[in-house]
Length: 175
Image 1 (cartoon, rainbow, N blue to C red):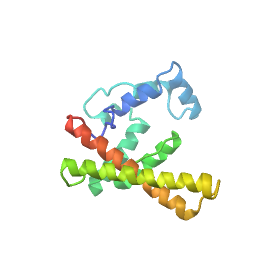
Image 2: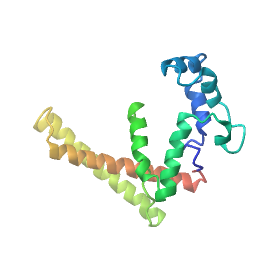
Image 3: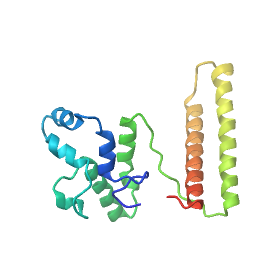
């Protein structure tokens, strides 16, 4: 995946074209940010760059600047991990959650799938214990220890599911 694309294969300008697609959004956004950018410039962000190097156009969007920050971190550290707070921030602002893709297990396909299955079963057991605690043993109460155990299992389950998605995409030639 190139630095200017997200996981859906869209360039920054394509993302902005989707987000600011409604008629009048460019001008409304310009007004919202108190004219820091003209409506014409905002509309330009929604078009493909006129040259290979988007920096030559003089109309670099804020989203492209975020991509540049991530590219810088990757270049300096060899990994985007330090830039993950950006993704967490954006996900939270959009009422979502960011989970980085886990590294692929270094085991055989069958063993990897068994690991995912095991993690999901363990998570199911923890969720069932939490349900019992919440509704039967101490209704409506959760201890910090229970919360941390549940959170840890949920994170492991999400990571396992993401790993499975990544593994299956690779098997069908996807990203």
